[in-house]
Length: 388
Ligand code: PMP
Ligand code: GLN
Image (cartoon, rainbow, N blue to C red; front, side, top):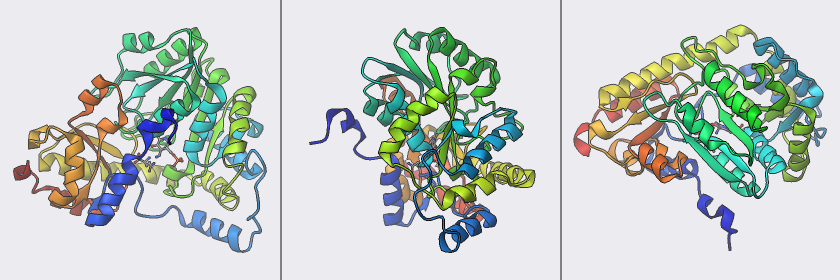
């Protein structure tokens, strides 16, 4: 029954591995969600908005004004970007922003350039739109792209280039030079840049996060997407947003209003307040995640994995071959039973034969967990050596 364009997408790896983790009682380092809740003030604000604040009915079309203003203020504060709150659209997480943008801008015959491996909803949303996906490989160990391969992916039909930095699943953070090249090609081929910056506050070791829209001339062709889920450890809230030039945001709004209409009324003003939290909060996110990244990366190395450097996000990618496991997909499904830990195979974030092959031995672990949970996971994986 299922329509042909959605047949490759019947389940997601996150659903499958999380179910496996629950069934086996494994520590779930597969699906990326924190095991602690976000800032107390955020939770209290949301509770107040529900019980006493009278914020439980449909919010206005583009999202509540407080949140649109807070997103604009956040972009000014962190990136010196001038954003008109009228050009911010609040969505049901970044996921709905991505879908609305692609459905609003692309159709049959159009092409979307993105990088492989990619966050899984990209492929599904591109397929829904009827456009064709052209991917540019990111290869281990540094997951950088080859500029010639990037250029070769663009054609006169390229409508959108979909960028994600800091990058899930690889943990790469695109440099200013890399982003500039993407921007130059988008300009040359008159494509819109859609940039998924949900991990914007998770770049480590002083690596700068460079928003695409801050590059010269790029704001006028860039749609910037982010969300509250990662920054404030509330992945289940699904409050996201997109901003950019009015005609591009308008295309997304047209679609979005018929996907969910509008949601998250009591959560939106709470997120608005959280965006204005002081620098100590944002610095703390980086300090905590840097420590967790090191804890897990060192532990995985000690357990026998090859571990690739993570510069951003809360994921670390490993190569399981030194342990005798050639197939990360197979390992991810066996890991809960072998040692009581769950992880996701990186090959599921690829679809070209070369991409799947290049990612075959790689497994992704999430480190957005309490230190003691990561320590326990590392201990459990200590016994993996003899189990291949
Ligand atoms: N983009 C990327 C790269 C992600 O990792 C995620 C989180 N799963 C999303 C988008 C979706 O964000 P949200 O939960 O706000 O829909
Ligand atoms: N973004 C998270 C991850 O990559 C979770 C995504 C999801 O559950 N759909 O793990």
